[in-house]
Length: 130
Image (cartoon, rainbow, N blue to C red; front, side, top):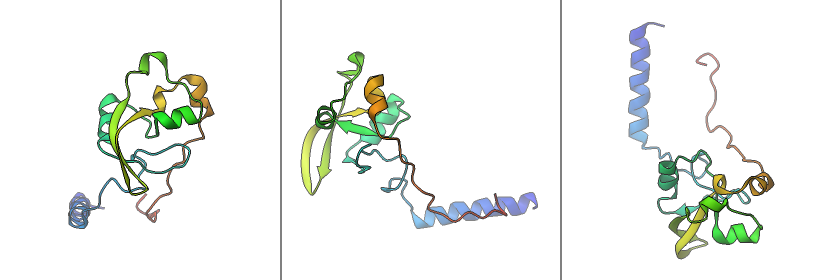
């Protein structure tokens, strides 16, 4: 394939992506904050952004109540490093909910978590292109 054709292909892909206005924050997106037990995507303001700023590689989060329910422990030096956000759940609005990333759990609690579930691909692979 010539370089010009390849450049044209990239430009066409970018134009299509811009015209479709596909959001990166859909519930099946691997980057969206979710509960490790239910896989429910949290509708919490700024949780993704705050976690990214902190440098977490995990997208699994737990509320303070969920941590107590599952009898999990936070690392001692992380107890005051919670993220406070409003939460929409079951058509209810909750204010100032404390969230912890699973990376803030101690090793024993982290090991009790169910394994992370990766979403399936949302596109058809073309092996000629791959």
